[in-house]
Length: 148
Image 1 (tube, rainbow, N blue to C red):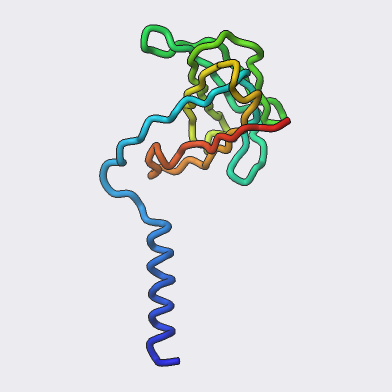
Image 2 (image 1 turned 90 degrees about the vertical axis):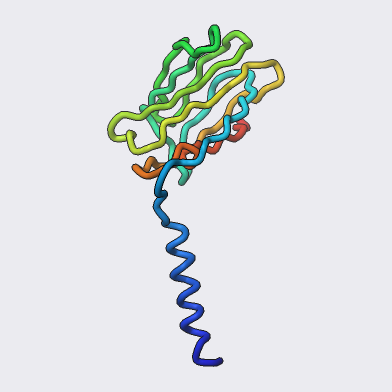
């Protein structure tokens, strides 16, 4: 091993750490629109990124009317992080999540949903923690089909 091996390895490690925790300076990049999630029923479970359920989270369902979304139904996740809006008419909706203390530290979500005969029967949402310097695209939930 030559005398430069350790300093170069250390420099590489420092640069990798700096890149992963870099703060965004200036405007956030424009966020790409999300494709609607096709579901048969608007029901599921809300978790954090470590798979822990999030109880008492506000979940709002809005329906699209004349190119705008209006409140349709609202719920709160139960002690197991679950919500269920029951059977609702086929059409486009938007699912909003919002947490109050002590759950205000999670990113609020605006998830486009389309209720259809061929969609998922349930889904999970994993919410990332909110940071003051996060851009909206960095704050999107991971949404996956839930097999029950």
